[in-house]
Length: 543
Image (cartoon, rainbow, N blue to C red; front, top):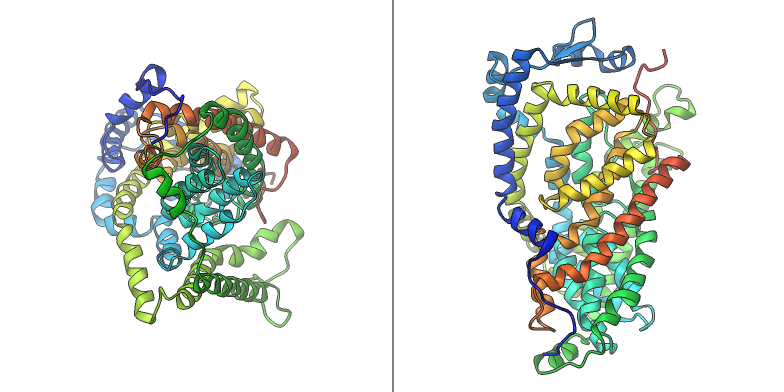
């Protein structure tokens, strides 16, 4: 193995403190159960003390009578904390347990999308597409190509970590560059640019399911638009690509010096140069045609002049009601991604030989559901935490008081969202799961920002920037040990301290540019996605 000048100083300083503290945290499933126990105690105390908040007339007008009854809000607009040990809440917990779990919005979104994505992944489409995209890149453009493919590779979920990151090391070594620089660039793209992409995908379905549940606290009719961050995440990909390019070529790779492969590393370089087979090329072409057909089908269902099932044509709509008009289209995007991944994966597999009959497709979908076993357990715990938080009224009370405090402080919204980005990044150092963190934060952040005139899509975008930036420097990220193994394949003595030190410059620059992008977006008032803006007006506001 080759040697590197990078120090492997171990777990010292603030990073060592974070790692030791994080390692003592229990599994996220138990974190939710412990929080439920704490929530019950807090609800009892706050109910006894009469904690309350008053909703203004605009909020009351938008919530509707059914929601007012659900939260026990009277005509005076005062909402009180309710004990979770009240007879009503105890009955609700046991009687509605199946409903609480199955009506957890992210659950349905993720299950549907993953049925299709499972076929695309297991047929080999994702892995071959990533190899094809980066293998022919010129040496000078290798870093930005790896970075952008890594960010797009987030649609492939686990495959991006398992396939692209080690492949990037091989490609860099084959080009006479240091393989650790390739691994760093790919890791920064896949995980540091976790939310950046050219189009919405599985992560959007997951996060916006949680966003919808949080938004319904104030506005029961709120429907999440999983394309609501499309423009913003595309801009993140556009901005993060040169950032990763600069950090890799100017800061990281010069520190390693010239790489000279030794022993097994020489074989690793030669093994990584295997060409894509004719069958795989044929499969990629068929997958491309399949994607095009699905896109055309959805376009026809939205724009066809003789009937548009994905457009709400009932009644007359003003320009301001475009979101209402397009709501069937936005809600159909979960199904669209399911069909897109399924069709592309099946088309690729039938040509590449990985799918021989229809039973193979069923088996791949079944395996994808097996992989979601842990997520189902986590979703059960998260669903009950979110539901009980709402039953206690503490989320809404916290949102009202938080909104009032921010409004009185005079803090501009662009600065507020910048603070939320940094706060999300700090939380990310201790809780690795993106869905777990958003399930914890959304019940307060989303209603609070809605009261301040920020849309649920805007709150989600701010969270996503912070969640991405620090993924690559916390050992609690589930793939961190795997990335360490990939590095040790090339440099045997490479340790946790080495990996963390290598990724810190990426984390800092991604955080800086992410915060700047979020603030600029708010200041300029650009739309976050089709039919989604940062600004938000509660239904009924303004009379």
